[in-house]
Amino acid sequence: MPLSIPAVQRALTEDGLDGWLLYDFHGSNPIARRLTGLDAAAKMTTRRWFYVIPAQGEPKKLVHAIEPYNLDHLPGGKTVYSQRDKLSEGLRSVLSGLKRVAMEYSPGNAIPYVSRVDAGTVESVRQLGIDVASSGDLIQRFEAIWSDEALKTHKAASERLYRVKDRAFEMVRHVRQSGRQITEMDVQHAMTGWIADEGLISDSSPVVAAQENAGNPHYMPTDEKPRAIREDEVVLLDLWGKLDASGAVFADITWVGFTGAAVPDGIARAFATARDGRDAAIALVKEAAANGRALRGFEVDRACRAVIERAGLGEYFIHRTGHSLGTEVHGNGVHMDDFETHDERRLIPGTGFTIEPGVYTKEFGVRTEINMFVGEREATVTGPLQTDFVVL
Image (cartoon, rainbow, N blue to C red; front, top):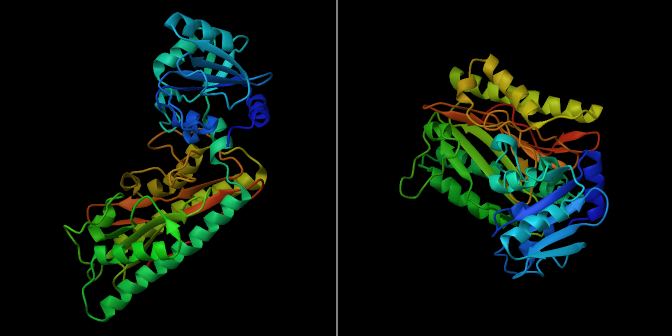
């Protein structure tokens, strides 16, 4: 569905912006294509196009003479160019009167998910005397906010993933008690089937990682090298999915179990530290939402990471604290990140994301991952919180 121009104009006014300049060349900016509805349109887009939504007044289009019709489904006047000098004149014309515009740009490429416009195009706009700001928060408002129905799909997916998680741990426990061997791939194959049985779809099979493999955050078992799950080992399950329905959004969880009666002190301490970091992040998000205070992604990462660093395990937490959730498992909203990037985007009402700290060593790894949703005055965790290892 194309953008609501009045809604965009309200957002621009609130953010102190004169306009939003959407631009694409040959699919270089998938965000602009989705927002303008071009992704769903069966049109050739081999030439540069621009769509300007001003804070006040009518939108303006700048399109090539070979493809003059590509933005006809959107409101606004149209300027057609062909030669390169006409492109420059056209850009000056459609941006006339604007002093500060948002584009899919991130200073220093701090947020690569947002940084979709090439440096040369940004330069060409700045050469007109126009300041270019990041559209990061605008993108969230129009791509990352969940509808009430989307939130329902998330909660439904979450409930089903927790059932699959429970079945997987019970499978490991039952096979071990029977004295038979079980591999990571055995569990993964079973989980993949259960996820499908639950009516969920995903972009990948779930992660099943034992002991040292759990120390690799993106480990994935393979049939070529099946690894047995043995006595006194960590078993990490990371699974994600969404309903097979239009507009459904993902849930994404990670839990850990242990195939023994007594968890070694070092492993227990690592999990407790990750858990406490998770809970510190949750508490910060809830406090900010309750008080209507603006909170940015990097602040959540800092709150979580500080706990892990104080425990002396900071060097083993090697990824951001969390990521946006949407119709793709890594959505286009704010990430909880002051580590891989410095995400200054705000946590805005109507968005969902993960909190997933981990501790990873060569000998083992642990992670605890939950999902949160931020409402107008309340932030909630949408599933159970793991407080200790599941005994297998």
